[in-house]
Image 1: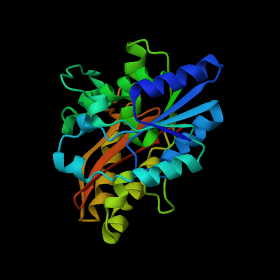
Image 2: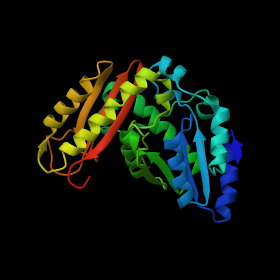
Image 3: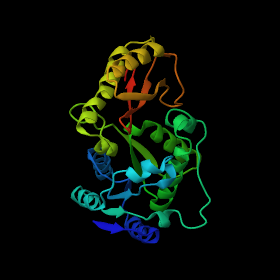
Image 4: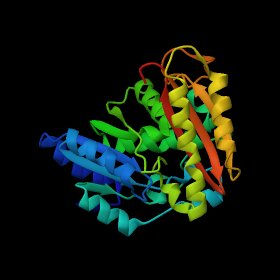
Length: 283
């Protein structure tokens, strides 16, 4: 595996691979690699000749400096994990490399960025779409892979790529969960043992929602009421938002007549977690 820190070096390396007819799969991450990331890497390895992973903790998408400062970082461990899992090129740019002096340009996807996480984290998705646009322009992959745990991000990135006529295909990979159901996330490492156990109420409530909405016509309000009650049984878990939405528009639905997404953000102690599940007939 080759580790690269400069944009020009990555572009030169990939130009040679493309000239040799190699297809490029790209996995953008913020590091602290875990099994969820490894599922993305495995899919890229399956689909493409060359696998590129980026590690960049993007300051533009954090609305709280304390959140940015506390975000898990393990560059040596990430490098070892990437190498062990068949990554060909590991791109680890500095903040100065991605956002040099006099940087003024940002990308924003309207409407889709205003709901769910966007409603409580102003500017978050402007940072996400800006850095993803930059990374896609730098790496120019054939396919880029994103986890469905960050479902809103996946939908927004797909919209951005379509609207800006980018060449990359965007592929979503199903959420990876631990044995207790908790969606694997870099933030899970910030939970203490008690909080980690408390957090499992979130997937249990979502699985219950999936069971409720297995038939057509279930009211979204009924689903949300039951999910709130289930999560409310654990007083140390505080819901930030809970919505039942259309999977494409991310707008609230009144009842589940087809596939719908139940999306939740909650604080466990001081750690913010997000999760979602697809429900409804055929989900």
